[in-house]
Image (tube, rainbow, N blue to C red; front, side, top):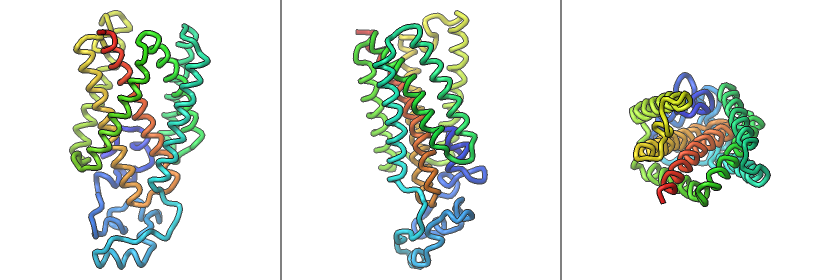
Length: 293
């Protein structure tokens, strides 16, 4: 089973129509961290397979020693690339906020930036390898889009973007906490159920957008400012949290199985897309509650 994030489902932590996370989770002292069940082993991607001392440790049930090979993805790599990608989003947003006053022109630029970001995201998603220029370009255009809409929301509901940022951080922190604590087990069944809900949500929202555009569903339809709009917003944020658990699992498994170092860019790309989703939905939700004051 693959992640709903197109970055992970098209490339990166996916091998042979599956990926390590749900199909062959490593067991302590077992062969999964060697060659059996490891999608990177055939590519020479498993550092333990090339370390005779690690193999001896595994045979005796001892924890494996640090790998001797290099060029493998580490958590530091993921953190650094994620900081670069998210930092680009923030810089783009700040510049757009400061240089583009709220106007019809800025709205047009925001839509154009969103479309360019979408195209870059799709191009990267279908590429076999990570292209840092595409990823940074996506982050820059996404930042412009977020900067304009954040300024728009702030002009109507003062402080809404700041609250949305805090909410995004809270959701991300809480999701990471429950994931690391083992309260959520990312299994194939969990992924199937979550993906079904996510796909259904996207389809329904697309239909709702068309109905609103043609005047069939006034006041935003399912995206109204009433209780239904609140419920839809909360569901969207929960789906974003679900995406995060899949991302965390695949990053963890990629490190365990010795994924190539360049795939840290894909991890950063996927996390950025998910965090943007959560921020936008949080911004909508904050605006709804602020409008009730």
